Length: 546
Image (cartoon, rainbow, N blue to C red):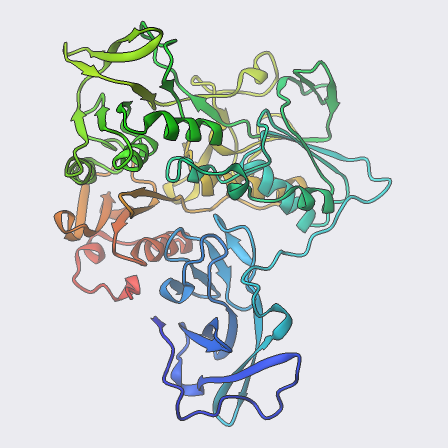
């Protein structure tokens, strides 16, 4: 249950014992919340999440540290609350982060019960702080143990932070070919004219303070696991005691005539995003590929480009992920904004004039005018550095790991988009999931296991995509589903789709149905089966809908 602020007129505003360092307010009566319930309360115009669990009241910040969602609109389950927007989880007693994509913890406030009234005290010094950095150590002089992190993305960053949170005192080196510190890549296809500075996940001062070395504009070329050495592209060699390989994937190029023409673009970096934004203004834009990123870019460009055309090799967008029903809704949403779709088709040639793209030729014979061509047809793993090494790869050159994110080589871990891993909620089926939140989870699990704190990966995949300002949320792993149970209507832009396989729910997608995706994710996380019968029932109380 989630609730909003109770009427407070009849209650006195503050505790008579209030000290100058704290702001204290009566927020409700002791009987206002039952176990397993929560609500938003206010202390000095400051939003606080009040919860009750096993008879104990707790108070933490109410704004998710990821993008600021009100946690009171989320899902409470046992000792944690899950954000309604993107699935971050926090401990309701301590405010500590338990699941990403959030990275910081929440402030924790004092609670006192007196004369059947609930008092919450907020420290005045931290009144405006909506985030709390978890306590972290730094390097300890004389400790030479070195953890080398290859790649500058989500997995590497969370691995480095978790090591310091666990008071690892050795050397941490992050090597990335990027020229930027780790940044929020999920923003690139949603806000394309983004300033790099605005999406940095941590500032340089943070890395200095906690002794995390970041080597920008360097790339690992090879790994010698016998000697525990990595050779870099500047000719230098770095030794390690433990290694995390999280070099991710890159965009797959089109292999057709004309691919070298100007204004053929792929989205991989903030600079790519800015260039795409600039060159598309007032132009005819053609997008190849109907992935999540492709659809987000099409949505973003609607009011900026002169025309937007999408070419897809399948019948519908997301056909193999979200399924045909949601693919149809997406096409409908974008078509209503004059986006043209050519599905079941492929690009065979790009024609140019004066070295720039002019038109695109399709397999069907259609010729489409194009000033800019954006290619988003898939990914290629950045695993070339492992060729000739002892690290095992699969047939597609991804790296299989176990539930501790360990590769086949001792002291070598792998995480993020490069890893195939056993997904706990799918009976440990080996999967490759290129979700931001999953890469973060890999980084955390790798760090804990590097520290000899055996911890298994059991994170539930959670993903979101934004189209025309509307967010579709997705949780679970729906591959191989055989049936769809739908609440609401796709056409009304308000729905909850439950994916069924073997009479059980295996995934969920929702639009304007919060916090249903988070409620389903929480059920998956707890290991409790959601039966087809429960999914079909009209009783939706278990979804904690607000």
